[in-house]
Image (cartoon, rainbow, N blue to C red; front, side, top):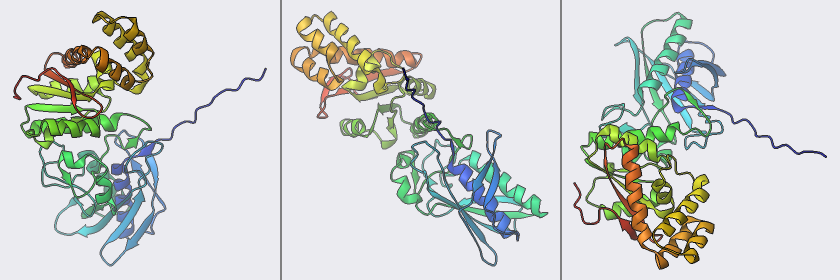
Length: 369
């Protein structure tokens, strides 16, 4: 009998905006120093690997050279994938070393708490280090010393930034030039976790005592309406990263963390799921059925909940027959959140129904601190 084996295509890694900027900088320096425009350049990444990066285009005027690189995120679903990242380079006779500035499409930092101080271009220290090393390598190959000014630009940066959370972090006018290793690992979670960390950092730097954690844009919109008195920096989208986020919140020393979520995510949080991915849905509903039985419900409700296709379906059953379960789930979310933080935070849980109303709130009678 023939057996059909499923094979999984190996996912392709890509490179960060920081690596793209370093490659464009090296190419621009090479051209500026009188060498023919390269088709590729070698870049040493922050993790020690050396990658050969294709150069899209180079141009030279009397005292300036510019080169562009197409950012390739590999098989990672990255909003900056295929973005054009460019560098303009010119020799500097006033100062030695490599001066790096941000041009068109590179965001500018306006809030404290990030790796780059307010007022500076949003080019993180890691990419700056790569850019400087790339330029120094080009100068050494040409036998030149002295200084060089490098301006990073992203022609579509402003448009791309509109699809990111940069505005929440206080980065305006374009994208960030990022990279902790130089490599984009396909479908890795590092970028999202780094965004959460940055959001908490900004909230702490803005003296927020209470942060509101949501799992996406829809729950965040409802939370912003409910807690309209809180500043924008206090709202943090944590996606599926429940345990990681609560631990980070504990590290930052916030007084209160409010989890404002829909029922499906809440059920998984109530079960202390570190990561609330949809793959856990079946086990979550089976546990919800057990809790419902413990609350006094009979088989007429418990069995349909256990067999439900989605948490949404279970929600409407409970809403009609056992609404006390919403408060029970919310209380369990609080316990899980505080446990994941190492009991360093006080948590509050708000469960939204599917029209944006509040199904349960463990802190309904308390005032915000």
